Length: 464
Image (cartoon, rainbow, N blue to C red; front, side):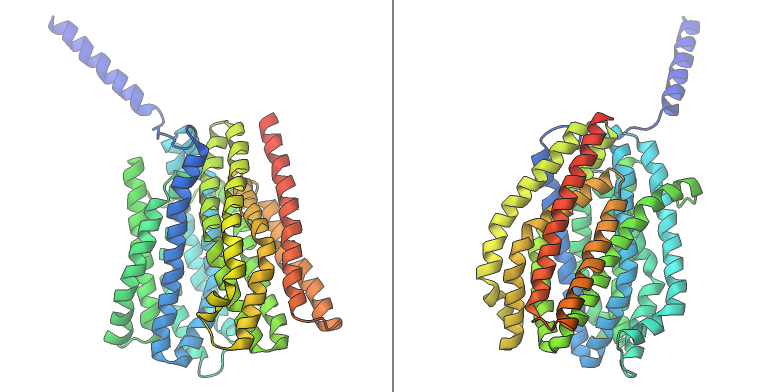
């Protein structure tokens, strides 16, 4: 009898050892069930998180204003330079989602862990590169953006602190991308909400309590981003029951960079395109620049739900592509466009009819208000086109095809509008409003091109 018991114990141990050699599994959450339900569940927290992020940035501006106009100008210029690092972070988030979602769709924790470790290593690498580039290029960039002699030191003061703590930014972007790929947008929303509240406490403490000035605003952001990164990585480790350690596997890095760099460059084209547009509008006076900037910020607020939907679509499409369920990828794209159409039906009348009231909240100047209202009303023509572009890019990135969005971004943000507006404004002396119509027409044409290209790529996926 004892011999039989012993054999049973040995057999049980062998079965346990064999089972431990199998890849760990994680339950995919987006490869079954209602796609619309998944979109609503994921997009609402993602959109709320973006609202908190917007409010966070406004908080920094608010406290900088208490330091004086010079500090506010320095922070504005430094933020423009630092946005170059954020482009890398946003690209890392998109690339991380693209690589992790397919493994999540197959339920392969072991595969996900491999990518997470290398994402952490890449985040550290990007941080080091950012610091080195900052040492070389920060001062020239600040001067290039028009910082006067008494403003440049304040801008650089902010930049040195944020660059020194850039690891918090890159790690939090990577961790957020991984959680989105796993179907979790609530954790990042929570981190952004807590960060917004913490900013209200840390900004006055560091800036005025410790007398750090502009450096205090930067230090508060660095502390919060480091805390955000630690929290999100802890959520990932607990969710997957793994330990995350930075890895530097060049073969994986090459694959990851093929997703990260095009997404980063696509984001960079938006920044550069914005600079060029502002420069051209500046030909008509600073009031028009102010009006356009207010209108643009309000437009971005209205587009936040579509951007939240973008996160949901990328996760759903990526997981289902990994699971081999191409029909659900196609369904996710079509239903995202229908949900986006519903958003447009609600938002367009508000943008058009309430634009005078909304712009009036920011200024009493009639000329500024007129430009802002004009931009918002013209831009309603392109609202749904933006939605189509966002969802098309999300699906293509989920399918690990980031090159077309990058090429389209270069054409849409830089080449075409710059060429047309230069001819219209500089050579032919057309009125400023012609620039707004150019933006709308280019966006609408780009949306049509993106739609048909995405449909073709989905059809290829289904026939493969």
